[in-house]
Amino acid sequence: MFARSYIKNIAVVTAFLALSACGQEEGQKAQAGAKKNATPVSTVKLESQRITLIEEMPGRTVAYRKTDVRPQVDGIIKERNFEEGAFVEAGQQLYLINQDVYLAELDSAKAELAKQNATFSQASKTLTRYQKLVKTQALSQQKYDDAIAEEAQARAAVASARAKVDRARINVEYTTVKAPISGQIGASAYNEGSLVTASQNNALSTITQLDPIYVDVTQAGGRLIKMKQAIQSGRLSNSDNSKIDVSLIIDATGAEYPIRGTLKFSDVTVNETTGTVRLRAVFPNPDRVLLPGMFVRGLVHQGALEKAFLVPQKATMRQPDGSAYVYSVVDGKVAVTPVTIEQAQGENWVVTSGLTDGVEVIVDGLQRIGPGAAVAAQPIDTKKTAE
Image (cartoon, rainbow, N blue to C red; front, side, top):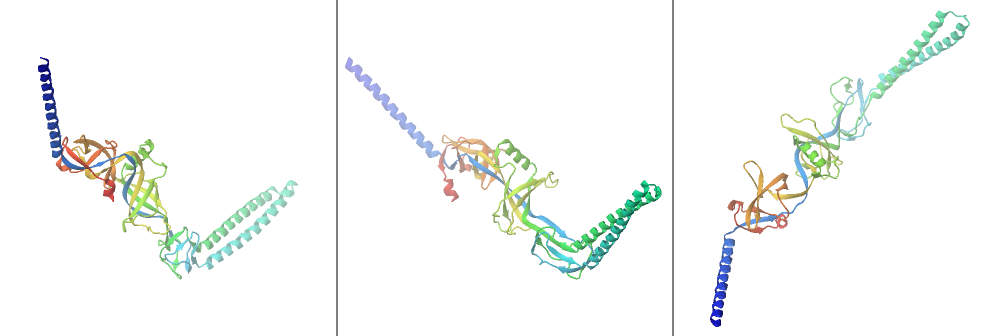
């Protein structure tokens, strides 16, 4: 009896083990079939990082300062003391207008001043004598009052003559036409022997200051305000909130200008036609590489985002409402992951939300898959790809 029961139990255990082995074999076959049917896709593993936001804007160079050289007195140009196209210093003599007439006027004004000083001196002495006489009633009050008036008139005449001397001296100084600013001087419109007048419309020449130089770029209205608000709120970090760096690419050559500039200000109004705001940056230009009127592209360094992701643009898709999403791999299947895009940077999007460290995003094979589809991820080495 005992032997029969023992044999029966052994038979049950054997049957159970056989069924288990069969189930495991079928499970392994099912898994192998699932892997075999999974769609191969290329993925990249993303990690958050500190990303500097750079916005590219079209722009044009503008002279830092530009001024016309104009005559302030009438006369014949006697000398021209500069080379066209040369660099001139502020205060440097550029032209000399004939001084003979103005020197004669200065001498005449000085003589008139000397005459009025003598008259004033005599009137002052007379008034001093009359003050003593009027106290002893040896002089009428009328003559004393007349002496006071004559002394005042002589004093005023001296002041007027002195002003004429100053004016004549200024006119003599104006015959020497000097550079109002330092910079490159252009062509001369007048030469020796030319008659010029203080009221003429044409300038003698033009001086342009090239170092430093302005660069005016345009940005969509409201973007600058949002950027400043982001910096102030702490979403964007900036080492110096009062300073925004700008890089420059010269359109004519495609080369990057080696020196960075600084954003100075933005217009307070939006252009009604284009909907843009003008921003002005200032750049050092010691070698005069940048000339006014050149077309450039300004790269405005807006600050840095902490814990952001660089996602390849080819990996992102759009919903009908315009919102962005990517396909990520979760447990071997495709998952839809909505993302928030900040801006484009090269061939990538800067994504600020929706992703976590280590997420695998599908970049190739998107046309062959859909949400929930089984996939076989084939990671891409982004560093080797970049090389």
